[in-house]
Image (cartoon, rainbow, N blue to C red; front, top):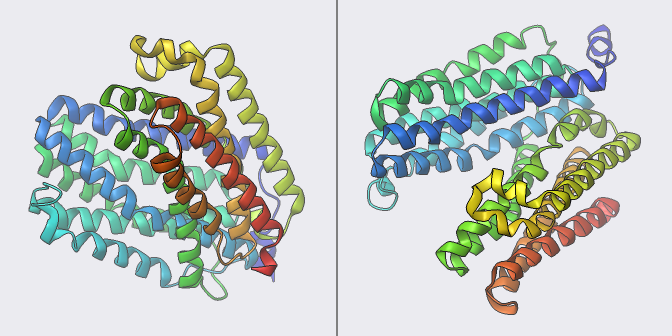
Length: 394
């Protein structure tokens, strides 16, 4: 009982907690951004393409790591002291095995050097299992340590790659360096969480699969318009559309820290936390949409350069799409926290609707796809909200 009371001790002030987590997220994104920037300067065009492909494979295979963190945080908030158990390691092993299975097609289909695939598998496993300890810290509302853990993950995930590129180690050497630093992530995070009490049963595979599928669906529906624009529009128009989606992604992830802070309390059934999180994220979205309306040309200039200034009038629509998806992110996490069985279903339905609409129902133009994406975000929010309201019936 004493241990449980220790875990449920009052959380740090929300503002300070959010600031630490937000800074850790910004730092992680910054170091991640260095990888393609340095790759463009240090590698040949072929190796740069391979590096981007490797990064994409690692990002997709690493989605269960975030699912593991979310599931772990929810379970930990409900059951103080409960560890992740073996599921964390099994999830990491499954993801590493999936990457290793790419070996037969790495050369012909993905045009990757075969020597990079085994290190990439180890790299993926180390990154995924990090979700085990980050989830424990998040569920315990130890947000300063969570921020430090996020920083450790970012440095371990990208630091070796950055160092390899700076030292001119080439593609394979940089991947090996990245793997070496990634393997330091698990022991570092285990040391960081060593003071956390351990008691009770661990999370189940179903919890991890549910959270991971929701995360994957969120990524799929929010990136679908970008892929469809690439498929349906001329090269110049798809490039311009890609610049616009920078505003969408910014509006999605800018208030993400709110959900990180709220998730443990959502898991304990706090309706007030859901209302506050929704209000804060909605206010953030409204501010970003208003800012885009007032300075859309500047937003496109910052995102893509002077060549895209004329598209500034579309900035509020891209920002609105991102703001709606940010609210979807809150509602979907609330569903996961409440134990919903299919939180990803509304997102997959919305994504399928976007594909059908853009492929067969609307003109293949920049504006048609843009407005279709905004409508899809609104539909995803409405369906997710309904699913959360009536989830006991599903």
